[in-house]
Image 1 (tube, rainbow, N blue to C red):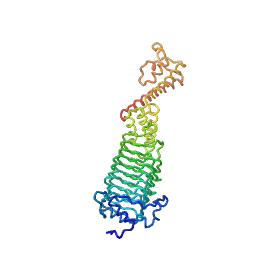
Image 2 (cartoon, one colour):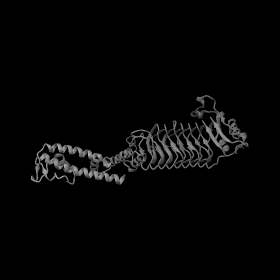
Image 3 (spheres, rainbow, N blue to C red):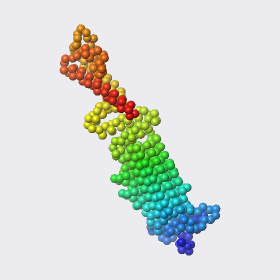
Image 4 (cartoon, rainbow, N blue to C red):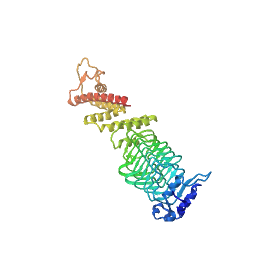
Length: 445
């Protein structure tokens, strides 16, 4: 048990200010000397033992009636380890622009609004914590190896990471697996992570915002949001080095950068979103499923097509589905790939049936011109209808003869005989491809 007589002068300032919630600021006013990066060199006049902070947070000093007690310390050198394992705080804790000698241990603590804004910490062990009635403020903080561990944490407010720098190269910079955050995680305005940011199965009441963030984890995952749930997911980061895992995440609105290919290889199988922002033509969004490191997966294409369909942009939805078939074709065996190329060229897998008409018109003009220059021979001269090169060509192209000239006339010269056989074969191929493509569309949407 600490006694007041044992406290140093800066500790007494903090102890006395606790009852009224006043801030104790130990800074000198010189920006260079007040930088927490050099806090290890601060002297006794700026040093506060972690056990003093712990005693106050646990109610070691009496609160003044009618006042709200707060531990609010700025510009201090925190010596020893701040240990609040399974503790229940009686007040708000704000340790700003401080330098910490050892990694705070807050495992399973029940805290009020808590902040380390602008401080330098050699890690932060806060897994399973509960923050009631406020935010966990890590704005402008510098947290080094082993990073910040917040898995299974429960926050009523938000996790604030603006301009924070979390550094654990080759490891995990922020472990927020299974977090539940009432508002969300705000990591914009210069947030930087060296090492993986892990948020699998996190439940965010509002948003994960990474606008302008820099996530650096070469050769491994930079951001893991597998099975994450949020209303808004904003991934317009300034830089991402490493992979992004969004598999089976569910969000209402997904904000993505306009980049082709994406800034980072992104796993998107099972990702579900209601809206995709900003709204761009399908050709600008196909990079998302096309560059998935897992290769071809049907669900990302179906999700993207459904998004355009819900907006009434049927043409864009068809473009996505056509791109899906082309990507799928790369996974097939040679014979199936060849058939796929034919379906693509003739009818666009059924999503461009007008191509069949274009091919039919081209072949009709080619055949009519060639047959008009030749000399046909009637099978039965006395019964044959007058020869018409255009009708004759159409009769060859239509799989089931019905115009009366295919069997009534023929050509004896090899080139025109070969053309006639080729047109019959082309007619069957066009018809088969059209039926197969349309059937594919009807069956798969």
